[in-house]
Every structure is written in C-alpha cells, then in structure tokens.
Image 1 (cartoon, helix red, strand yellow):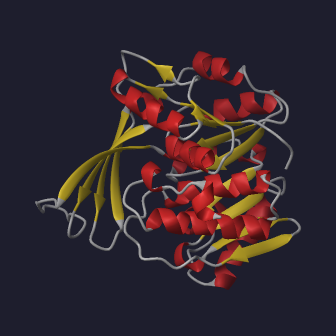
Image 2 (tube, rainbow, N blue to C red):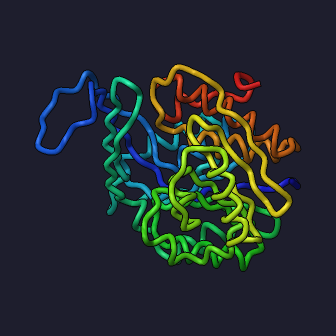
Image 3 (cartoon, helix red, strand yellow):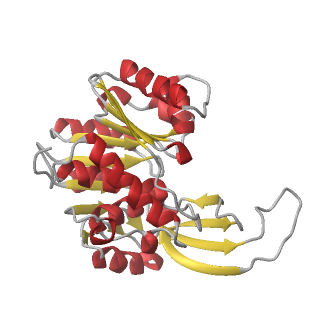
Length: 300
C-alpha cells in the first residue's frame, strides 16, 4: 500500500458508560454499579486507533462546544483534528452505554452534530485531499453517499464500515467502495445470507461479498472465530487472540485502525489480520474505548 493520507469523516460522541449487573430489560429499573464519561463515536474511535497505531490520520467530525475536550484527547494520540466543524447551534452526539458483568454492551445513540453535516462542509473537508488519499466512513453520520461520490471525484480510496447496519446502507453507492469492514452480522446482511457461526459460513459470506463487489476487499470480523480478509485472489483468516473480556466497546474500531495501519506498514494480509487481532484483544481486556486502545509498541 503506497504512502497516503487517511481522512476519517465520522462520528464523535460523549459516551456515558453505566456498569450494570445485566442489560436492563423492558419495564425494568436497576441501579448501576458505576458511571464513567468517556470519548467515543466510531469515527473518533477509528481515528484514535489509527493514531495509536502510528499512522498519520485526519479526523473530521461535527460537534458542539460540549465536545471540544474530545479533540484534545484525539490530538494526544497524534490525530489531526483541524478539519472538525465546531458549531454553537448543535450538541455533540451522545451514547448511553450499558456494560454488563460479562463485558457485553448495549448502546443508545443521540446523533447531535453527527447527523447535521451540510454538503458545503463536506466539500470543504474534502478539498484538502486528492489522488492516493483514503476516506474512512461509518454509518453514524449523514450525507455518506454524497461524501463517497465527492471522494471518488477527487481520486480517493473509499473505505466503508457500514455500522450500525440499517436499511439506509443499501441506498449508498456501494460499488464505489474499495474496502468494506463488516462484522459477522453486517456481513451476512450485506451478502443477503443467513447468519452463521462456523468457518465455512464465514468464508461463504466473505466470498459472496467479493462476488457482489468485485472491486472491493472485504474485512470480516467474526468475534471469537477470528477475522477474515477476502479479495478475488482468495480468503485469509487469523484466529482471535484469547483474553479475559472486560469491555468489548471499541474492539471493532481498534481492529479497523490497526489493520489499515499494518497494511500501510507493508505487512501482508495475514500478518495484518494477526496484528489487528492482537490490538483488539488488548482493547477488550480493558474498560472504555479510546483510552483502552493499545499503542503500537504494546501490540508489537
């Protein structure tokens, strides 16, 4: 992979993380075992992972004054946040996250500025980039399709993590995507196949996605079953690195950032999968999202 600049155009959230014995059920009221405020949002998380993995990365979000502290945090990880839009008339997105005793989570999102981008703002952000650069997008902001088309006009490589997966994904110009990052559920949805939990099934999903989107590379994470990388040349797999799960928040974003940074470092797909799996396992073994992500030196 040649030298390039990475732009993450994505979400930035204030995460309110409640520790709970179990995820609250309908009609139930429970007490939390603790509350922590932290920085989140898939865009900001993936930027942090890329920065911690040692890759030059630009993050462009849209926030209110209440979220400026998150930009300071991203800067400390080596992320360039100069393209972020800060407005007085929007609130920063928020996520209310329950984390149970087993480390599983449940999330409610309030989008705030994440869903308030204008075409002019996206044009302004993309004006700094061109041929050979990459844009990374997730499904937590508005105007994703517009950003994809404008990025293509500028000769940028398009990387899409269609999460959270909903009906709007199929309205996007998916044939423009160069790399998809999907988990096992998103991958099955996108491929139009049933969910699975075995190696053969995951390979079938990855292969079908390559057939549907022959221009694209597919990165499929499958939880405890590891991760897959698929192109028209074949399918690679790396097992998960065992760890004691404390909090799974941010694991997928860590994987995304470290996989891209590893490929940029010149590693082959197999070694990139393995390094990204190690990084994600370290994240899962610690509480929180951005702060739990390891530095490159820890992963190595």
